[in-house]
Length: 488
Image (cartoon, rainbow, N blue to C red):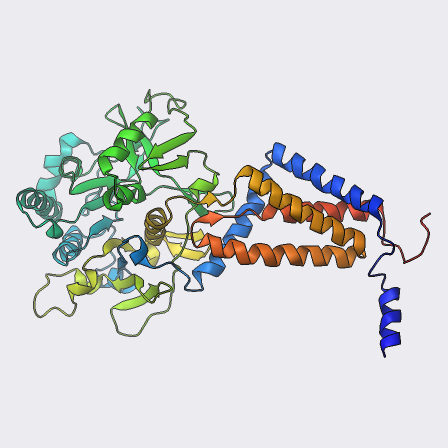
């Protein structure tokens, strides 16, 4: 049996004897040559390949309950008050979210002592009918014609006034409204904020009311991988910069940071001219609150670390659709149907506000007619859940950064190229290629997935690309030769 196995081993040409040093040096030269070429030349398909591998690992991570504990950085859990299909149908399928319902949802979150309230709903349009144009001068007319809007505006004005007088700031969580944008004839090259009935009260309501952008970069394959941390705009022909909701959350919760500091740093990105498409300053980096963020849309810094996935299954008649937990068993996300919260809360209410206490409460919709479902690296999800993942990502990790410096990465690549060259030289190409790929994938997968939990990325895509190039070159230049068979 042993004799037949050794005979089969030789026939398969698994090992070449003696060790061909010349071929080994040739393989090293090919490896380092293509490595230097790939480093010097910035090829778009390399970024696409890296994105796909990171998507794959992020999907594995998000489905493994391997989310770090919230206590490590004192991050609040999230509660999503979801305007789902049942809620939407119970409200007679309105064209816009009824403002009296929205008022009750905000009131419930504030009464429940949430730490922050996010309203991911366009409040720039009146609910009864749509006007052709809307401006600040029409605000009084809007409030006169639409009593729902007036009730919500009055509530927010009273909210700000009471918060400025009270000593108990736990009853005054900051409320961030999603800022809607559009283009206009006057500012066709720069987005203009849509003006609605809440313009004045929100603009003047800081530090209790804010506008925040919910724009994200969408890749060519329609996957939302990266955030857009600020949005240059022009309001009444005046340049401004609207920070994203996740950037506002960092200013609210992170130590040694504030919304004022963030806004001051973002002033550098104001358009210089509202009529010029090239008027937005091109700066390479944004330094704010102790972190450095690249402004390149495809940079690693721009990636959102998705930790929470969207589950479609319902849990019977309970108000909670699903929840997501951390590795220590904490609830990081709870999703509740918005319907029972959209009424006056009293002793006879079917819901308790204790679930909202100390949380970041996000109000938004997943109902089908809203058409706010997007493709992400961890599957399809409502836009509001993308906002939640972005807020958690910036609070937990700030930005994704490379684990190794350039010289450390060079040493790692050198070791891997030596391993690949040895395997391809010592073994038949098919076996050597498979063995080298397996070694790199196992080593990288274990370390990359572990460090990804800390917001660090170890780029293992380049070694895999070099291996693929090795395969192509070897297939074009030579075939595997039998042991002791002289070369022609």
